[in-house]
Amino acid sequence: MLRFVIALIKHETNTFSPLSTPLSAFGHGNGPSFGDAARARFAGTNTPMGAYLDIAERAGARIVTPVAAEAWPSNKTSRETFERLVRPLEDAVRAGCDAALLDLHGAMVIEDCDDAEGEIVSRLRRIAPGLPIAVTLDYHTNLSSELVENATVITGYKTYPHIDMYDVGKLSADILLKSLTGEVEPVMAWGWKPLLASVMRHAPEDGPSGDILRYARDMEASGKVLAATLLPSFPHADTPFTGVSAIVVGDRKRGGYAAAREVCGRMLDIAWERRAEYRFTAQPLSESIAHAKRLGETACEGPILLIDHCDNCGSGGAQDVMVVVAEIIRQELEDVAIAPIRDAASVALGGKTDMPSIGLSGEPLEVEGLVRAITDGEFTITGPMYTGIRTFLGRTAVLDTGRAQIVVTERAHEPMDLGVFTHCGIDPRRKCFVMLKSRIHYRAGFRPIASHIIECAGVGVTNADLSVYRYQKLTRPIYPLDPL
Image 1 (cartoon, rainbow, N blue to C red):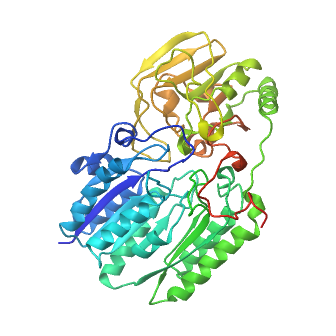
Image 2: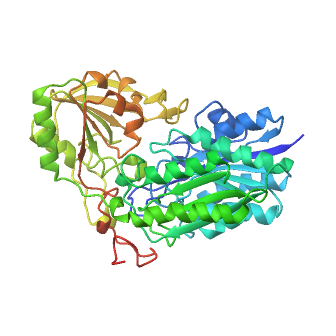
Image 3: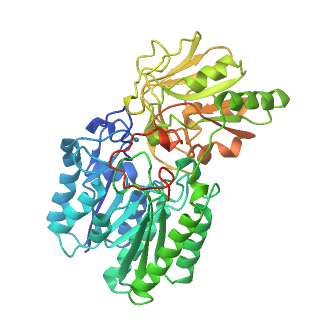
């Protein structure tokens, strides 16, 4: 019987974030899962780990799940916390296995290492030099040579919002299983460009990524390569590896490294030729809200989404910057639902987090209203992203100011699913305006119900204007910060 080690260790590290990342932050605030609990949390879910578990079970393999740990984006975690996550994985591999299937992120930074994923895989490689290792990566990966050199197969998401996570895990596992039987012989080619792409321009429908991904899918479908992945980077991690990259898995039995290298080069050429399209220019906030108000006065045939993209938990934002909420109140928009505002104390509304990395201090917003609901913040995601995952907002209250219903939460949470509202009694489909602290992931659950979408440039550590960050480790020169 084959023995597979399946593990998940994921964190998108915003090195400018004011939020710490203790061990308790993993499990989305409930702490990491180990052993059978790790398997139970992700079985039957739309995740790479969910796919790994299904495929291993169908292969009749004995499954070992030493750890499953994922935290919302925030600043670097400590070496001690990192070791608590990695050592169970090392122990499982040391005990002997036929393959390791790893669900990683690709932009995890710890206090003394800018490339956590590279360290994870290289440590396993030292324990078991011949071990087949499959890795899935997030779309927002900052790829390193250490990771590539120590993995057998690497695949990554092709969607943003990331609704194809299961498919990506299935592809990675399928290639690895075929390599175990000798059906294929994986070989990988990769490359990197000095291009800092704004996350607001990463979505396939918003910029060059769409054409690159179509080409990648065509190359996979043709059989020229086994897998082709574009990684537009995570620009809020200040590391030497930050930048746009691509990685392609070829088959030595068909085209080999040459085919993989050709496809990888073409993907990156498109990105570089169209690099200006990866820049994002925001409209002034007051104009955005005024435009939304005019749309609402005409007719509300479905909610008008107001996207506060500079303070997004899903990229490391504090999720309590009140600039956009304050402008909504100032311009007197009516029938608004707002979520989530992270404010565990709830004495004043948000604005309690200082952001020294970008020179901003927290500014609380005082409002008056009635508490309409109090919940434990727990619900199961039913939308197309992270489907089936049980998630936790922490203690949650709905503050009704008359014009707006504000969902105030103990924990940060990406509003990618209608459940952030519906679990506490608000139907966002019946609102004129819905304000979300999000960037792109809101599209998974909320775009289908929206009549209009207005991007609102507040402030925060997920600002799309990359010139506000004080980079120290970034490989320079890099576009668009430097002339190239």
